[in-house]
Image 1 (cartoon, rainbow, N blue to C red):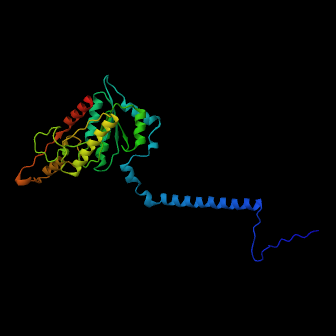
Image 2: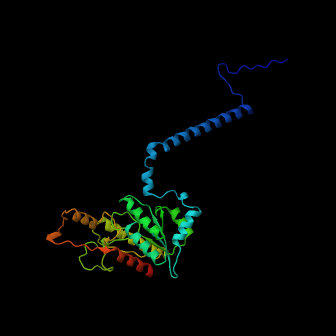
Length: 297
Protein backbone atom coordinates (compact mmCIF):
# COMPACT_ATOMS: atom_id res chain seq x y z
CA UNK A 1 0.00 0.00 0.00
CA UNK A 2 1.43 3.28 -1.08
CA UNK A 3 1.87 5.94 1.64
CA UNK A 4 0.66 9.48 0.82
CA UNK A 5 2.69 12.23 2.42
CA UNK A 6 0.34 15.01 3.68
CA UNK A 7 3.13 17.17 5.08
CA UNK A 8 3.34 20.64 3.48
CA UNK A 9 6.05 20.85 0.86
CA UNK A 10 7.36 24.08 2.36
CA UNK A 11 8.28 23.64 6.03
CA UNK A 12 6.88 26.35 8.35
CA UNK A 13 4.28 27.56 5.82
CA UNK A 14 0.69 26.57 5.12
CA UNK A 15 -0.38 25.94 1.57
CA UNK A 16 -4.10 26.11 0.62
CA UNK A 17 -5.07 23.35 -1.71
CA UNK A 18 -6.71 24.78 -4.84
CA UNK A 19 -9.67 22.46 -4.83
CA UNK A 20 -13.24 23.40 -5.89
CA UNK A 21 -14.44 22.73 -2.31
CA UNK A 22 -12.02 25.27 -0.82
CA UNK A 23 -12.91 27.90 -3.40
CA UNK A 24 -16.61 27.42 -2.68
CA UNK A 25 -15.99 27.71 1.06
CA UNK A 26 -13.95 30.92 0.54
CA UNK A 27 -16.69 32.50 -1.58
CA UNK A 28 -19.28 31.56 1.03
CA UNK A 29 -17.23 33.24 3.76
CA UNK A 30 -16.85 36.41 1.69
CA UNK A 31 -20.59 36.47 0.99
CA UNK A 32 -21.38 36.17 4.70
CA UNK A 33 -18.89 38.92 5.53
CA UNK A 34 -20.44 41.22 2.91
CA UNK A 35 -23.96 40.46 4.15
CA UNK A 36 -23.23 41.20 7.79
CA UNK A 37 -21.29 44.35 6.84
CA UNK A 38 -24.34 45.66 5.00
CA UNK A 39 -26.57 44.78 7.95
CA UNK A 40 -24.22 46.67 10.29
CA UNK A 41 -24.16 49.74 8.04
CA UNK A 42 -27.95 49.60 7.80
CA UNK A 43 -28.30 49.58 11.57
CA UNK A 44 -26.00 52.59 11.83
CA UNK A 45 -28.09 54.47 9.25
CA UNK A 46 -31.36 53.65 11.03
CA UNK A 47 -29.88 54.75 14.37
CA UNK A 48 -28.84 58.17 13.09
CA UNK A 49 -31.97 58.64 10.99
CA UNK A 50 -34.26 57.91 13.94
CA UNK A 51 -32.18 59.76 16.53
CA UNK A 52 -33.83 62.69 18.40
CA UNK A 53 -31.45 65.24 16.87
CA UNK A 54 -32.57 64.40 13.35
CA UNK A 55 -36.26 63.93 14.09
CA UNK A 56 -36.71 67.02 16.28
CA UNK A 57 -36.79 69.30 13.27
CA UNK A 58 -39.52 67.29 11.55
CA UNK A 59 -42.52 69.28 12.88
CA UNK A 60 -41.09 72.63 11.79
CA UNK A 61 -40.23 71.21 8.38
CA UNK A 62 -43.77 69.95 7.94
CA UNK A 63 -45.14 73.39 8.77
CA UNK A 64 -43.23 74.89 5.85
CA UNK A 65 -43.39 72.09 3.34
CA UNK A 66 -46.07 69.83 2.04
CA UNK A 67 -46.71 66.41 3.43
CA UNK A 68 -45.40 63.51 1.40
CA UNK A 69 -47.25 63.36 -1.91
CA UNK A 70 -48.14 59.72 -1.24
CA UNK A 71 -50.47 60.95 1.53
CA UNK A 72 -52.59 62.71 -1.10
CA UNK A 73 -54.81 60.30 -2.93
CA UNK A 74 -57.51 57.77 -2.52
CA UNK A 75 -61.20 58.01 -3.33
CA UNK A 76 -62.07 60.39 -0.48
CA UNK A 77 -59.32 62.90 -1.35
CA UNK A 78 -60.18 62.89 -5.05
CA UNK A 79 -63.89 63.20 -4.27
CA UNK A 80 -63.28 66.31 -2.13
CA UNK A 81 -61.08 67.87 -4.82
CA UNK A 82 -63.64 67.26 -7.57
CA UNK A 83 -66.54 68.49 -5.46
CA UNK A 84 -64.74 71.73 -4.61
CA UNK A 85 -63.66 72.34 -8.22
CA UNK A 86 -67.06 71.50 -9.74
CA UNK A 87 -68.42 74.29 -11.94
CA UNK A 88 -71.99 75.25 -11.01
CA UNK A 89 -72.78 78.04 -13.47
CA UNK A 90 -73.25 77.90 -17.23
CA UNK A 91 -70.22 80.02 -18.08
CA UNK A 92 -68.20 79.12 -15.03
CA UNK A 93 -64.53 78.27 -14.90
CA UNK A 94 -62.41 76.01 -12.70
CA UNK A 95 -59.70 77.83 -10.76
CA UNK A 96 -56.81 76.62 -8.64
CA UNK A 97 -56.11 79.35 -6.08
CA UNK A 98 -52.67 79.16 -4.47
CA UNK A 99 -52.32 80.85 -1.10
CA UNK A 100 -56.05 80.32 -0.58
CA UNK A 101 -55.79 80.64 3.21
CA UNK A 102 -54.12 84.03 2.88
CA UNK A 103 -55.84 87.41 3.05
CA UNK A 104 -56.37 88.03 -0.67
CA UNK A 105 -56.63 84.32 -1.49
CA UNK A 106 -59.54 83.80 0.91
CA UNK A 107 -61.56 86.69 -0.49
CA UNK A 108 -60.90 85.74 -4.12
CA UNK A 109 -61.78 82.07 -3.47
CA UNK A 110 -65.04 82.98 -1.73
CA UNK A 111 -66.05 85.41 -4.48
CA UNK A 112 -65.32 82.89 -7.24
CA UNK A 113 -67.40 80.26 -5.44
CA UNK A 114 -70.32 82.67 -4.97
CA UNK A 115 -70.57 83.28 -8.70
CA UNK A 116 -70.66 79.55 -9.47
CA UNK A 117 -67.06 78.83 -10.44
CA UNK A 118 -65.22 75.69 -9.41
CA UNK A 119 -62.54 76.56 -6.83
CA UNK A 120 -59.81 74.49 -5.22
CA UNK A 121 -57.40 76.06 -2.75
CA UNK A 122 -53.76 75.22 -2.06
CA UNK A 123 -51.85 76.55 0.95
CA UNK A 124 -48.96 75.43 3.16
CA UNK A 125 -50.26 77.24 6.29
CA UNK A 126 -46.81 78.52 7.26
CA UNK A 127 -46.25 80.32 10.54
CA UNK A 128 -45.04 83.74 9.33
CA UNK A 129 -47.98 85.04 11.35
CA UNK A 130 -50.38 83.17 13.64
CA UNK A 131 -51.59 80.11 11.66
CA UNK A 132 -54.84 80.14 13.66
CA UNK A 133 -56.00 83.07 11.51
CA UNK A 134 -55.37 81.00 8.38
CA UNK A 135 -57.23 78.06 9.92
CA UNK A 136 -60.17 80.35 10.65
CA UNK A 137 -60.17 81.48 7.02
CA UNK A 138 -60.01 77.83 5.97
CA UNK A 139 -63.10 77.06 8.07
CA UNK A 140 -64.87 80.04 6.49
CA UNK A 141 -64.15 78.74 2.99
CA UNK A 142 -65.12 75.17 3.84
CA UNK A 143 -68.55 76.41 4.88
CA UNK A 144 -68.80 77.88 1.37
CA UNK A 145 -67.78 74.60 -0.24
CA UNK A 146 -64.13 75.44 -0.96
CA UNK A 147 -61.62 72.74 -0.07
CA UNK A 148 -58.03 73.80 0.65
CA UNK A 149 -55.34 71.20 0.04
CA UNK A 150 -52.54 71.60 2.56
CA UNK A 151 -49.38 71.42 0.47
CA UNK A 152 -46.48 73.29 -1.08
CA UNK A 153 -46.58 74.95 -4.49
CA UNK A 154 -43.03 73.62 -5.03
CA UNK A 155 -44.29 70.03 -4.80
CA UNK A 156 -44.40 69.15 -8.50
CA UNK A 157 -45.85 65.69 -7.86
CA UNK A 158 -48.73 67.16 -5.88
CA UNK A 159 -49.50 69.75 -8.56
CA UNK A 160 -49.45 67.07 -11.25
CA UNK A 161 -51.84 64.96 -9.20
CA UNK A 162 -54.25 67.87 -8.76
CA UNK A 163 -54.22 68.65 -12.48
CA UNK A 164 -54.76 64.96 -13.26
CA UNK A 165 -57.88 65.02 -11.08
CA UNK A 166 -59.21 68.38 -12.34
CA UNK A 167 -58.32 70.05 -15.68
CA UNK A 168 -58.25 73.60 -14.28
CA UNK A 169 -58.90 76.38 -16.78
CA UNK A 170 -57.18 79.06 -14.66
CA UNK A 171 -54.63 79.39 -11.87
CA UNK A 172 -54.83 82.39 -9.53
CA UNK A 173 -51.35 82.49 -8.01
CA UNK A 174 -51.55 84.37 -4.72
CA UNK A 175 -49.10 82.29 -2.68
CA UNK A 176 -45.86 83.86 -1.48
CA UNK A 177 -43.95 84.57 1.70
CA UNK A 178 -46.03 87.18 3.50
CA UNK A 179 -43.26 89.61 4.27
CA UNK A 180 -44.82 91.97 1.78
CA UNK A 181 -47.68 92.00 -0.70
CA UNK A 182 -48.62 88.40 -1.42
CA UNK A 183 -48.99 88.57 -5.17
CA UNK A 184 -46.94 88.02 -8.28
CA UNK A 185 -45.83 91.62 -8.34
CA UNK A 186 -46.10 94.85 -6.36
CA UNK A 187 -46.50 98.59 -6.62
CA UNK A 188 -42.90 98.86 -5.43
CA UNK A 189 -41.65 98.23 -8.98
CA UNK A 190 -42.38 101.90 -9.73
CA UNK A 191 -39.46 102.89 -7.53
CA UNK A 192 -39.32 106.51 -6.38
CA UNK A 193 -41.83 107.69 -8.95
CA UNK A 194 -43.43 110.94 -7.75
CA UNK A 195 -46.11 111.17 -10.46
CA UNK A 196 -49.68 110.75 -9.23
CA UNK A 197 -51.51 108.62 -10.13
CA UNK A 198 -49.25 105.80 -11.31
CA UNK A 199 -49.83 104.11 -14.64
CA UNK A 200 -48.91 100.68 -16.00
CA UNK A 201 -46.92 102.57 -18.64
CA UNK A 202 -44.67 104.28 -16.09
CA UNK A 203 -41.02 103.24 -15.90
CA UNK A 204 -40.20 100.21 -13.78
CA UNK A 205 -36.50 99.85 -14.55
CA UNK A 206 -35.26 101.78 -11.50
CA UNK A 207 -36.44 99.86 -8.40
CA UNK A 208 -35.54 101.52 -5.10
CA UNK A 209 -35.18 98.31 -3.06
CA UNK A 210 -34.10 94.70 -3.45
CA UNK A 211 -37.68 93.66 -2.80
CA UNK A 212 -38.86 95.77 -5.73
CA UNK A 213 -36.05 94.41 -7.91
CA UNK A 214 -37.12 90.82 -7.24
CA UNK A 215 -40.72 91.68 -8.07
CA UNK A 216 -39.64 93.22 -11.36
CA UNK A 217 -37.49 90.16 -12.08
CA UNK A 218 -40.54 87.97 -11.49
CA UNK A 219 -42.47 89.96 -14.08
CA UNK A 220 -39.67 89.52 -16.61
CA UNK A 221 -39.53 85.77 -15.97
CA UNK A 222 -43.28 85.55 -16.54
CA UNK A 223 -42.89 87.50 -19.78
CA UNK A 224 -40.18 85.07 -20.90
CA UNK A 225 -42.44 82.07 -20.23
CA UNK A 226 -45.11 83.72 -22.33
CA UNK A 227 -42.64 84.30 -25.17
CA UNK A 228 -41.11 80.81 -25.15
CA UNK A 229 -44.05 78.58 -24.23
CA UNK A 230 -47.06 80.72 -25.14
CA UNK A 231 -48.30 80.53 -21.54
CA UNK A 232 -50.99 83.15 -20.93
CA UNK A 233 -49.92 85.22 -17.91
CA UNK A 234 -51.19 88.45 -16.38
CA UNK A 235 -49.48 90.21 -13.47
CA UNK A 236 -51.22 92.41 -10.90
CA UNK A 237 -49.37 95.17 -9.04
CA UNK A 238 -51.29 95.50 -5.79
CA UNK A 239 -51.02 98.57 -3.61
CA UNK A 240 -51.21 97.86 0.13
CA UNK A 241 -54.43 95.90 0.71
CA UNK A 242 -56.69 96.25 3.75
CA UNK A 243 -60.05 94.93 4.89
CA UNK A 244 -61.74 92.11 6.86
CA UNK A 245 -59.61 89.05 7.63
CA UNK A 246 -56.49 91.10 6.91
CA UNK A 247 -52.98 90.31 8.03
CA UNK A 248 -52.17 91.28 11.63
CA UNK A 249 -48.73 92.62 10.70
CA UNK A 250 -50.07 95.44 8.52
CA UNK A 251 -49.84 99.11 9.52
CA UNK A 252 -53.57 99.70 9.95
CA UNK A 253 -53.70 96.94 12.58
CA UNK A 254 -50.90 98.63 14.52
CA UNK A 255 -52.66 101.99 14.19
CA UNK A 256 -55.95 100.53 15.45
CA UNK A 257 -54.33 98.83 18.43
CA UNK A 258 -52.49 102.01 19.41
CA UNK A 259 -55.68 104.07 19.12
CA UNK A 260 -57.63 101.61 21.30
CA UNK A 261 -54.85 101.74 23.89
CA UNK A 262 -54.67 105.53 23.79
CA UNK A 263 -51.15 105.53 22.38
CA UNK A 264 -49.84 108.11 19.93
CA UNK A 265 -49.04 107.04 16.38
CA UNK A 266 -45.55 108.06 15.19
CA UNK A 267 -45.55 110.01 11.94
CA UNK A 268 -42.36 110.09 9.89
CA UNK A 269 -41.29 112.97 7.71
CA UNK A 270 -39.92 112.73 4.21
CA UNK A 271 -36.87 114.63 3.01
CA UNK A 272 -36.99 118.40 3.52
CA UNK A 273 -39.76 118.04 6.12
CA UNK A 274 -42.16 116.78 3.50
CA UNK A 275 -45.29 114.78 4.31
CA UNK A 276 -45.56 111.07 3.67
CA UNK A 277 -48.60 109.57 1.97
CA UNK A 278 -49.50 105.99 1.20
CA UNK A 279 -52.29 104.49 -0.89
CA UNK A 280 -54.31 101.61 0.55
CA UNK A 281 -56.63 99.44 -1.53
CA UNK A 282 -59.79 97.87 -0.12
CA UNK A 283 -59.98 94.10 -0.54
CA UNK A 284 -63.22 94.20 -2.59
CA UNK A 285 -61.48 96.35 -5.20
CA UNK A 286 -58.62 93.85 -5.33
CA UNK A 287 -61.10 91.03 -5.93
CA UNK A 288 -62.67 93.02 -8.78
CA UNK A 289 -59.22 93.46 -10.29
CA UNK A 290 -58.58 89.72 -10.07
CA UNK A 291 -61.89 89.01 -11.77
CA UNK A 292 -61.06 91.46 -14.54
CA UNK A 293 -57.72 89.74 -14.98
CA UNK A 294 -59.45 86.38 -15.40
CA UNK A 295 -62.08 87.77 -17.76
CA UNK A 296 -59.57 89.26 -20.20
CA UNK A 297 -56.83 86.63 -19.89
